[in-house]
Image 1 (tube, rainbow, N blue to C red):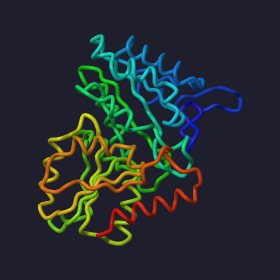
Image 2: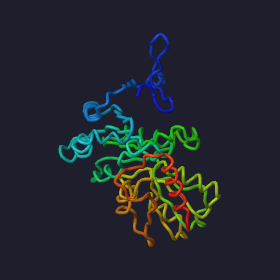
Image 3: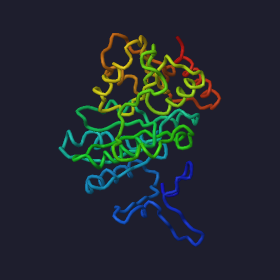
Length: 311
């Protein structure tokens, strides 16, 4: 959106005399042009156009951002018939990027879920990338990687709105400099690995709720590991990380979504085989992605975090 609703992320600045200024078009003399449009509210039509544009201009970074990820269901035909399967069906690569706001933030069942579970059921044969970032640097690097690849794959990024303003969701400048890259998995630097008895695996904004509890209670024997790339599953990085916790006896997957939604089913099928079973901490199964009352949401979220840190 050019007008930058939510935290005033204005891509276009309009002066009192109606002249417009686009700051991102003035970063360097050698840069490519940056164009942003306020699209109309037909997700089906807009994503169809952006998919076609990405196909016609493979060297352009073509991004469609949904107002809320929930509204991607209006473009489900494009996602199913083209984004997920065009390479398999027609041997045609496409690098379209979907930014889908996703996260339980107390805004109700129509403004909480981009249906991670649906996208993961469409994943096979390295057909696309499913990303759920927790740091600005990782979003920066995944967009760089998208264009640096010598091939094109659709990229789906889940982008919680609350993290736009979260005081902990920041990255130092050093994380953007030469020698840095996208991190598929992010380990816990708050704990000593050998002292850890329990590991909490998670993806997305629930990490910050877990982090707040861990640091407030100074919990040193429970590690929080972030899975930033859900698909393709980063098995090598995961295997290396698991070896860092030789004394851990309990492994948990923590998600905000109800247990019949979110990444749980995918993770359960994909998680590397260890000597311990993977347990689930999630909301109870439900037909609706989220509750409609903020007070009930807060109680559920607190209960979720509390259960994650129980013995």
